[in-house]
Length: 311
Image 1 (cartoon, rainbow, N blue to C red):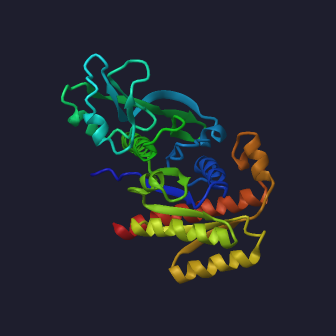
Image 2: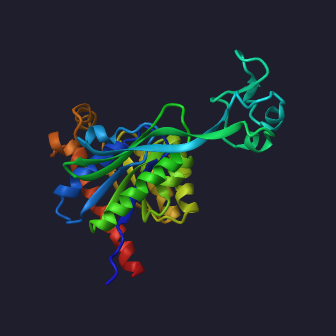
Image 3: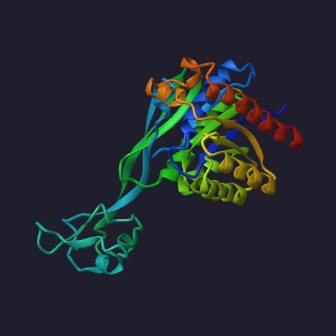
């Protein structure tokens, strides 16, 4: 009998600060306390500003280097200063060397790694040097295995790094018969978000009531729709602007999307984040904790409902 792969849930929002990571941390707690018996792994796909590890009490078990792009480098012993490289560089990254007359130098910040100069150089004086751009980790938490990463400041390839940690989470899930992978996605709709969405089974959008929140919701929904990923919505701070919450419900109805719950404004959430734990650890009976408990059940039931429909 073929083993079923782990289902993947990605949690997204149109911008930072909507409560996406707080919800992901609360879901981690629910995964071990809600009695649903789904073994779960977790991924922090916000590699540019990873912080879920701070709330999950993550203890690093493995650290791996992430080598992304390559940059061009000139061997000054071979360079004749002919200018062939400079003429093909579209990024204006090649200049006369400031200390060695008659040779060129490549600005590592301006270099895009396209390698055009490598092919243009008649002296074979230019080579592509791989660059380490960060680290990725497998950690242990009280709630299950956790995969996360840190991209060095100013580095690119965040989408590639997100793909890498997701692949390692999926492979580990296959080896250990894990049923569910919860992915705390990056904010926005850029390359890392696309990588976080790839291959997922359900997207949960964390929306806030208001004009800006509606705009962000529509942007993220467009991304999920483009990749044909089923979607549900939860509304955070829903009681702060009831009219805006009503508008989200009306929009969801026109789009045929289920709203799996509302989270009220609750100071217990930031207080628990300051202590570095999910909200249920310190405030299990708070309004937000009770709401998240229901949202977890609704979301996971929806996720595995899609699986039954597709069997």
